Length: 468
View 1: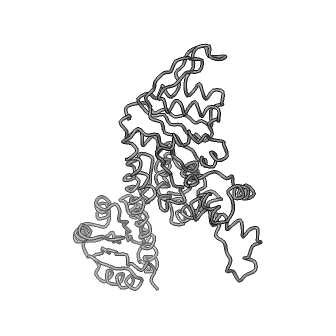
View 2 (view 1 turned 90 degrees about the horizontal axis):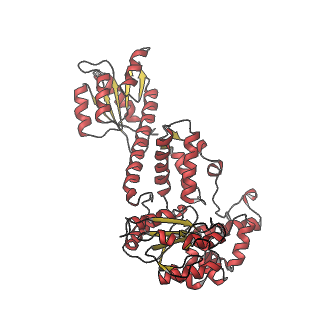
View 3 (view 1 turned 45 degrees about the vertical axis):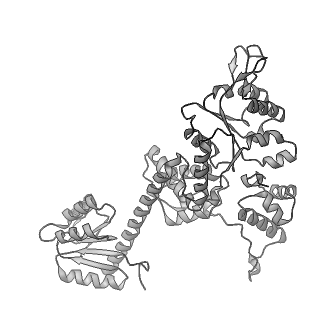
């Protein structure tokens, strides 16, 4: 049985002892490697210049150029290819010199074939990991076309395309998506690609400002308009003149304030609190929410006329769990950024850790992944992220798939648990669209919301819930 993968790794052996080369080549060939050998360092350099090898194994003591000098040249010209050096038994100084020359590992002579094969397997894995890290870094750089919006999935390509089309207009944009998907980043990307890019980008979280202050924040106030109004102050709509105003959590805007915002958007003018005259403004407005605004309209918690006024162009952000391998691209991006700040050398994800990241559902989306990578860098003990470095809920995460075909009674679940798993499985299959999930399950949405609350999951709306 081969000790390596079905695609044979190419190994270059360099030793001026031809019999040693033949012996190693024969043994490694039986273990599934594709072996080339050279009896001179100069010939090895020529081969490396024209061919690709997974690992190079070189003796130290050779006629002409020795193995240490060859190692230095190889590291300079092909830093992506690990070099293993064969040294005389007990020659610690030579081993240290080999590591300083950039060797990945060293093996003492006489070389046991099993030891050589094990060292080569580790080196091949190391080389593959370095190549994957480089690929991820290159992909992160290529995906940086939209600033912090990282991703190459089909879902994100659609988002990039819509951003480019939306940016060329002044139309009001409604950005929807779960918490942590990057709605403000999308708004900033639209602003930076619009004709208003030189103007201000002003952001306001409607849920973070008390109701009695929100009107003043938006429209401004005159001196003496209310207690503590010692000075006149322009509102954010006026401050964003010539640029973009981003209103986050628009679904949390108090009902009494909504007609005033609607009038301002329609008339393109504002009346400050305590004022009698209208003040014109010229700002593009982008709003965002993680709520189901259509349901809020039906339940009279959000005005229908304002909803249709802000929903001129709808841009729906996908949940992270629906973006496939973007999870690893983002993880590498955050890993690189956090290590640059912290000074720790945590450069890559182990394959096992990557599998856990891909399997997890990411209810907190990109924000949760970023926080996860910060924790990982703080706790990691090695230059690779290991499974044990991940938070427990990610390490131990189990999918909500329903198991019905089990023969072992211990694997069967009570009816209530089967229902819970099935409801969550349907939600996962429709990317969290509660309107569609309720239709499939045969529930009305209120029943679905009550069940989710019973399962300990708040019924936060998804962007797709707003589609008819």
